[in-house]
Length: 463
Image (cartoon, rainbow, N blue to C red; front, side, top):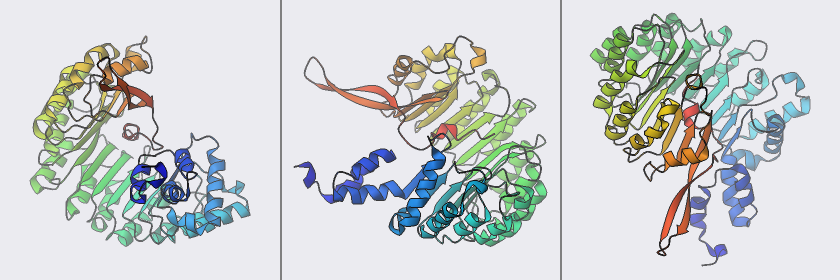
């Protein structure tokens, strides 16, 4: 069948595998049919990151386009802006007018991320609040001198709120805001560096409005203890599906919190947990409490990292073994950062976590040659990312050489699609060759990471 005669019904299936915007743009040039379907994919999600070349120029051009074309703006469902002119003073009246007009044209915008400090102003915030389809909003909470935090109360139908580095004036609006959004809100994330304004008292005040939460993540809140968190967890009607407790108070009593959660069945539906540790913790007691915390949970994603120096592996082996024993058959992701993990533990994870798809681990460079055998036991593994502390091995390369990385990939299951080491990520491709017998064989290759989004392993550690 000639290429031009392909049934239109399969074009969306073909284009679903095209992820880079420039490739989708090229697909628009094939013919009118390709243009129609590729344009939908090109504009349904737009992301601009700070490392994009001329990102600030691109974002201005984007809003100019969306302001001029109601049709293209109507296609936009997810807008992710990690870069934007920082000071609104450099936005002249015409540019700001285009931004506001563009947002008013985005009738189907469901999710907006606008995180650069100082890039939001009251006019933009007001325009976003008028997007009636908006359900998810991630934003920079540093409002001082930039926007009126009372405008946040205009976002009344959100299902997900993610707040980064909030000012006291923004937090002051949170009780009223969650009271307004309480019926719809399912996901709340508060990300701070080391904020003293997120307290137990605040969480206790919010608790009556957050009874429908499914996901709760607290990061960098050193004034939060088990008392405030228990107020939120215990008031929940259906039970949390995801919980992140990262960088909270050194006085947080995991033992007491775990006992309350288990005795009340509060985490009986929990599928994902993210925890942090530090060297001041009594690790033996903390490990016992952490294991108890999720003992009745149908856990699928486990993530843990140290907020300070690296932990040595013998100290944490008991944690891995108990998690494998209780949750091994369900775990899909096992993520460990800034904590050395022994080869024996990795082997057990790969052998007994039979549904494991994602594995993020820390190993010493000298053990990499022996790692391959451990990974070969994970029959459904799709993503593997290895970190190692450079200070422990001054002679180690900061990134594995491609041939070394490929040798590890070749020991993995045929399901492997992504491999990373420290700051480098590759996708695993396939090259078809004909062998001496005339049979076709697929050889694995490493190709540059092509997905425009941030790899999941770089999103785990947020402090």
